[in-house]
Image 1 (tube, helix red, strand yellow):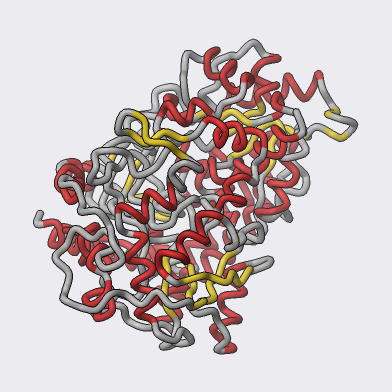
Image 2 (cartoon, rainbow, N blue to C red):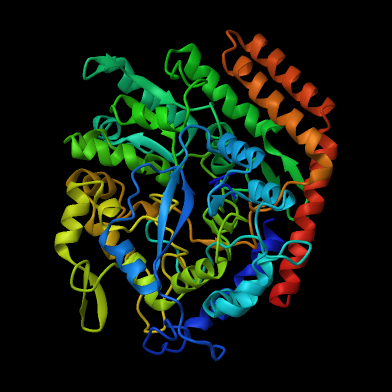
Length: 569
């Protein structure tokens, strides 16, 4: 699932724990000063002519309508590469739009998609293999991926898309738990401990009882969004997070690499019972089953939703809008919530690559695809990382005592205006994910300095007084302090292509889960809840649950074997 970031434990974590130092070793030596000829590569490139810097424009898909190529950083990208991008904005259901593009043979030069759709396009012959292009024009891509390079290859050996590689040895300073509670709710309650669903219920109910309306509108205790792809994030991921598990989408993976479907587990039943309780007490958003990604963000930005499951990238826009309106107390605090108080949290997991959500593929529509690879290869240079993540020296950052430092005026602008990063060109086609083929928050470049500005100190510098007050009340300095130490896993299941042999079962199970789940949550009595739950489980079992789990187990075990071979395990 896209962005599940929900994305195997004992064996997998041991497999990855020792390899990160080797990965970051690619950055151990300072890169030569970049020129028009080498563009910062630390590899010994083939003897070729200087790269073509003549102007060329390519279309690229995005779902973010606030992107604008005409910005200082992106203009500089064009100056250094000759390439500019024209955003083909998808409005509404992006998955549906991607399918329509493919059916009509009318798609952009570059598509940025999830694994499943990349596979669809590859099967239809709509995107081109990148192996030869990377061999000739992508030395930095190959260098940075290093021992993970073979993970880019499909079963047939072709590379059909490119994405991030994680070179960080440090936990991300900007990470945060995915359950959120309005800051005013916590303050009014005296900043109580909120670690379990029972405690979350109490703090929501008490505030809602005392404040039935906020700014003249009905208070909403807890909201969710089932319409579209968000159903996976809102009705599956909370269960995974509350168990402290790595995010493998709608699945779990045990120490023997066996895959099971999460929405029919006992813990899923417990979470749906929690939602059912909120519903029967008037605390669950009545529109939860019709809201989509944009609608729930808009509702949260009104400041009347007390709590939700909303990952950082999900709630960033509502928080920024609330801040811009002076409603800082209505912003959302990030708190880990568990089924009980003794959960061992292993959810803060990272992978060697960023496969799964934002994969760039070059379609057959693109002319001179080598220019696109050269452009992407520049983004994989140290110079490219500095430009896209730090900005322009003297404009966005200064070098102080040999270290890059964000200019104070940029920090102030980011606090005052949530559109600042758009206006300056920091955001890539992935929008506010700030990707641009990042090496990972905490990664270091050849000069020994960080690849991104997101250090603990810089993250803290963006906090407003209300945020600092909430964090201090819980003895924390950043939202990342609520999380356990980051652990590395070979990958997440949602990063891999779904098993085609179980496509029918997968579709039936997904359809019935979405269709029957509302009946469970909207049950009026405990007896009705039990009846509807059993009906859903029985239906999904008949749909081919065992066959689907076996097929995904095979996919996962093949990936683990590929991973072990790639890194020499």
